[in-house]
Amino acid sequence: MRRTPVVLAALTALAAVVPAVAEADSASASTGRATVRDVSGNVLGVVRFDSIGRKTVISGRLSGLTPGFHAFHVHTTGVCDPKATDPNGNVVPFYTAGGHLNLDGSHHGHHTGDLPSLYVSADGTASSVSENDELTAAALFDADRSAIMIHALPDNFANIPTRYAPNGPDATTLATGDAGGRVACGVVTR
Image 1 (cartoon, rainbow, N blue to C red):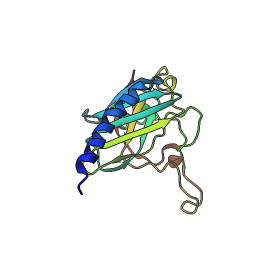
Image 2: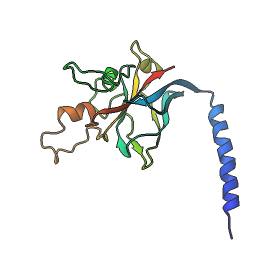
Image 3: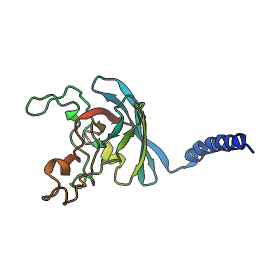
Image 4: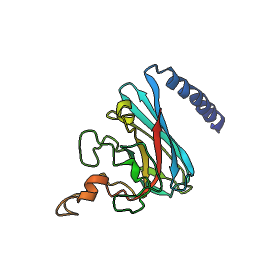
């Protein structure tokens, strides 16, 4: 017995109900969004920041990325200059976005702006949804605002067991999770 029409009807009904439930949540409000661009200025997609109760939900759909895992963070400064230079004069794309948003001075893996890694499919697309109960509108929109950042490499969240590194994680791992270069950035706006 074929149940495909019944399953399709149920999925269609569910697709109609889910947005209505989300809209009905009176505690939900849009906080901000970021249009994410690569170093050439190509738009890769949009990341949204929505307040739901006491949490911020970060969600986005992106394309044009290299397949595999990529570190995904909120950075401290809302400036995404792809031709930025570091203090030594070296071009470091998006250096102007500062480091990871870190309200309490923690090591990497516990920064306020640390998000789950972004998985990019073979076709270059990715979707992400996560909740963060430390990331607030006040943190996102302080005097210098903030930015969403996609890095070239996966994030290890500074999780290096001592059996692999007898002296523990090094300074780079503790600061960035060995996430590599910055490949895409978006200024968070209201």
